Image (tube, rainbow, N blue to C red):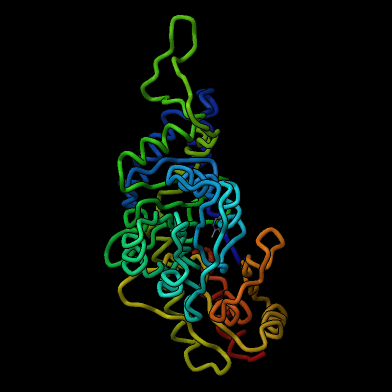
Length: 364
Ligand SMILES: Cc1ncc(COP(=O)(O)O)c(C=O)c1O
């Protein structure tokens, strides 16, 4: 049984082959078609496709104006990329605590850590469950702070009936190989402000406005850069894979929800498990099925012996030397010490799900 599953859609061979045969490999019509499909099918606002989730986060911070001397607030319960992008801007990551029942940023602890230097906040939708976005956006608006959602785990999630990718000034997605929707590697940035979106599109390709800078007769575009641009665009053959993989995504997300509900029901009375919160005003994308357990290493070993992989996926990042921690984060300490995830992907068969349930119920 796999812990993660990489979905390569039935149409992928033909889509990618057609792109290769066209010999138009870099950013072009398929990237545009992929962006239109992300907006139409997932409700993403002005998605700009880029070559990774890390690039998406970094470019969003750049366009938000984050630079040396600034502080960016984020949870420690995330992947290292969320913190590295802050350092790539020359800014200082300030780690805020999470709710130990979700792994998501605590709006109250975020508010408590705001200083005059705070320029942005990065709420991470841990495991695909959306953060408290109304509260986070309210605190951010009060202090003039840009919100950059890290939605690497949250393709297809929604909050109060609205899709993730339409909620905050910036949202960054990842289409890396083990995500719900993959382009091999890739990502997207969504912007609710059209001016931000224009800047993202310009600066993802060196800072040259590709769409409206025609070639001169001499064979070069007319540009005069005044700021740094990046080579962050997505390629057409990656977008072709993304287009093929968008087919059936809602069904695959629904299957994940169904498995999560089955696990919830079957594991509700198991001693030693703390179930995570299930707020009724949001829908998780169920990238991970997480919970907290007592004696975690015993749990992982017992399940492994019964053929079921369990994983922490990511441990808190503030302990890395580059960030100088660990910091005093009581909710994070509890969550990080006890959190564990079970397989929840759409390739699991009913027999696999039964095996997972039996393996946990047999004890550890
Ligand atoms: C929370 C989080 N943020 C950012 C990233 C970076 O995404 P990518 O690998 O596409 O650069 C990941 C990747 O797993 C992630 O889990």
